[in-house]
Amino acid sequence: MTVSVNEFIPETANTLIEEVMERSGQNLLSCYQCRRCAAGCPVAEETGYVTPDRLIRMIMLGDYENALNNPLVWKCVSCYTCGTRCPNGIHTARITETMKKLAKENHLQPERLKVVNFHGTFINSGIRWGRVNEMEFMGLYELKNTFPDINQFNFKPVIEELKTQARLAKAMLKKKRLHFGFELVKGRREIKKLYKKIKKLRKKL
Image 1: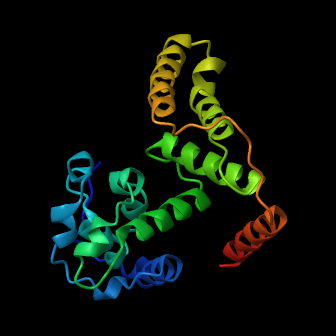
Image 2 (image 1 turned 60 degrees about the vertical axis):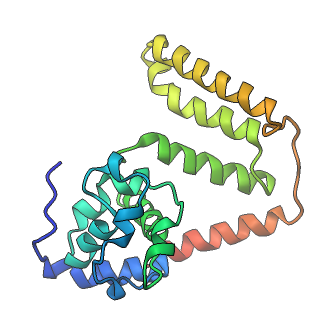
């Protein structure tokens, strides 16, 4: 992927900046590219040169396509190191979450489909039970990940994925971090109503 962060695109710059700032709650205009966030980003090696400052730069220049399609948006681990190092308190994790939502709304093919599956399954489980049920969440998440291979009768990667997750589950059980019971939380109807209300508001934007 060739990404230019030097070309200003006036047709989309102001609109993109305003939308990302409103939805993320971050003041991108206060970024002066000191790159302290880049120096502390733990996934910088995984994303190449696309560090938090570069993502902000893309948005500032109105580079809509590359701002939505870059490794950082999908590989950011939301550790908030960037925000703690930033002299102006800009949390790039909130910006990458906003870019994920924009990519989904624009029906763009995600660079990391597993990230999309994780987010969608996590949210749905939380809405359904009031909190995330680990067993249901992981079961549905793995079903989404492996369905394309199952549909094509390509079972080798499915078996490898299940083995990997089984090892992880075993390790989590030893540390008592995996629970089998279902816990219902009060106020689930209110949670569902709030979620539907937010979705309606986003459609109007």
